[in-house]
Image 1 (cartoon, one colour):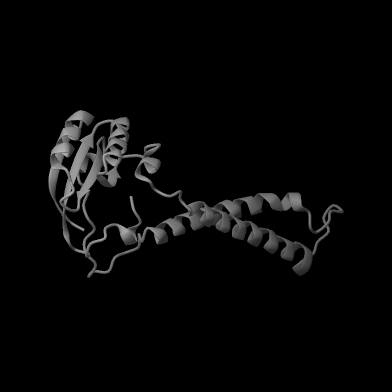
Image 2: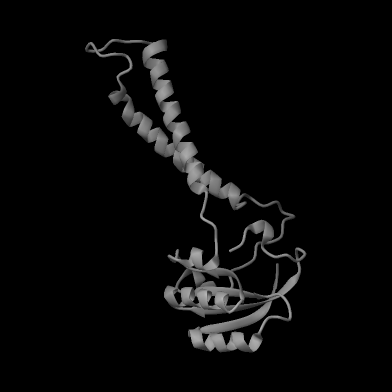
Length: 192
């Protein structure tokens, strides 16, 4: 799926002709995407009930950078935990217990590990929400588009193909629907 900023090079709110193909197996949907791309059809999106391995590459998506947010969050959490414990045990309230150094690192590992994981998780979720713009909408915002098929959250894999201009070969597309073994194909208009 293209980036949200450049989903379509048409004015926002324009009507486009879209074609959907529904499959009952992830392999068939993946093969359909590869075949449609090789035939120069524009696959806009694929709706699946769960992640399908290889679909990102077939759609030509970039690798995610969400891991960077996770790494930064983990480093901040681990650094904050170690720093706070070192400051507490060695500077603010130094205690010598059992002849050990105030900077006994093995005792600080469990707390630091837990905060590393906690901060990494928060950074991952926060980065995902910010990057995909999944924050509460203002009442004046348009209603988000509905799923092309309600069964996509259960057992359907839906491939969405966009028809932009007169170069779209409708007859060839209909042949491919039959060749690829789609359970159903729907043609319609969508405001994007």
